[in-house]
Image (cartoon, rainbow, N blue to C red; front, side):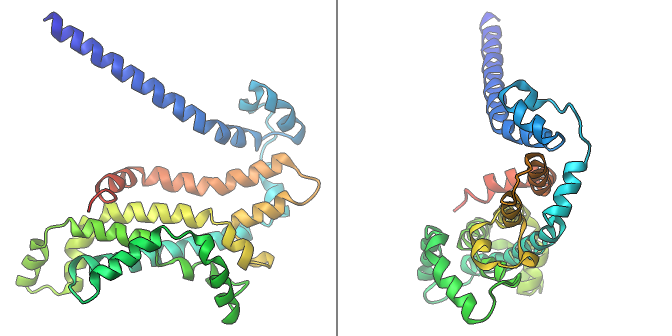
Length: 285
């Protein structure tokens, strides 16, 4: 009886220690976010004065939504928001379709050069985007796509990383599922739509969220390709808004808060699917 109690007490101590460590890490990473959100409701003078004290975490004095209004009017926020939404939507939806079909074909079809093609996709994962930046920019210039929205999403729909993620997931599914569907008279697309796709929802959720985070925060490529104000996404719009003197720090924090908000909403809504997808899909194969 004593040993059981000591074991339970030891388990409780381990749980408390784990929760304390997790809470410490969470507080460390959330501190800049809290300061950003709180500062977006203050005046410029209070933002700069409160950074050296715990007042940085206090929303008083509350200045209302004036900073957000100023950021939207001066920083052309809604135009940049529209561009970011279009680019992210096209990359996510197009990427899920193209990458999942490619991964499924590599996992299920048998053709000459299959292993070579898979090895090529794996090799492309480690190639940094900076190495492809100049050739891609020259290509966009040759076909006249510079300073357009389509140049910001079309080159990023097919991604070797997510092709391999879907390949790993589909490779772990038993082939008897498709064989049973074929015996029942289902074609390849019907089998994929009614059997494979429902099982692959965690993989789709993981790929979709990661793709959205990547596309929403993309900065280097828009700097090179987007020149006019009408095609600037939010990260690039924030840079131009930041560079307009004199710098209004409260307005800048309001702009940044509004830019981060869609990312937080997406993650909160799909958090369970994301965690499940990373554990079940990303580690298979």
